[in-house]
Length: 437
Image 1 (cartoon, one colour):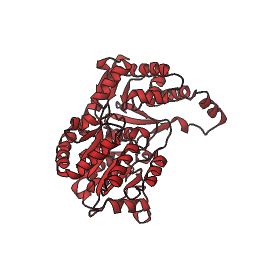
Image 2: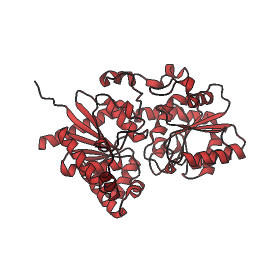
Image 3: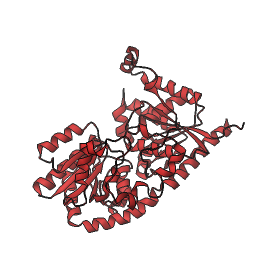
């Protein structure tokens, strides 16, 4: 029997929640060439909206699934010692599964992967997908300086660091003082994963990623169908509400947005802009926000306080919000900071005129400094309101920019060429390390 020469790659991320980083990992897991690679997945916690969409042939290990909750584990959390135990657990997974290469996707995953490699050295591809400073300051346990030193060492110890935009690459170089040749730009893949209908991963890739996927004209010609695992439309109040809003004859100017309900995403300012446009400007506008998170209660309170119930709908998590975009007139991304937002890319690919904020990285690159869509300063509700009104009054001009944006972004974020580059990089790093050992 011949020895399996495929590379064993472990993808490390916190959970399989519905965020952009998780969707990117899921997309790579589905697209990875099984004749060249054997994928594994390591999570801090085996949970999240996308957990059911992990390919059936991908083994999943999770630290918090090792044993039930106990007094000792609670004590370790109080003493801030669980991270060391996670390092050891991940190192055992690397050893037991004979992993050749690690791909860690987020800041905390990078820390865990780097820590595990102290005990079981393994080549690593570390990804940076968000501005490192707020991430680091949010998760610093003792001092920001100590957290910075540990994070810098974690990125330095990776075989290569991948940033998903040029702006974010420059930010990583400036903030962590990394070597320029150590940090490369690898754009996000255009995610097109759909909920699986069969158990065999090898047989699903073509079905999920066939020509056009769910973005084809044929798919868009009818009312969106429910995804696997969702409640039957006849019994789902949320589904019925969305069908009513996204009907073809809706006279309102329909705006969509998608992202985690978190202060960093800037939805408070978007609601303030809606208040200005609707209550002060008297415009007939409807906004649907897909996503869930800790800011939902605060946003709901604002909606009720300002009488926006008929104009703003918080739709919660949706496995494929793009299926609803057909009748949208505008997509808005109000983030305070964002590296390379998948939601904005997907809206542009779907031909929806786009409005975003001038975050330090990401949206400005996607929209070519305003040539391909609207840009306004972050934390500026007045500017958002003015841009929305402009999109209503000059919609044909916004649509013309959207057509050009779609052409450019489809080439930039082509998943086939992106996966080719990534798989080539994986082989170069892993094979090089094997040859040296």
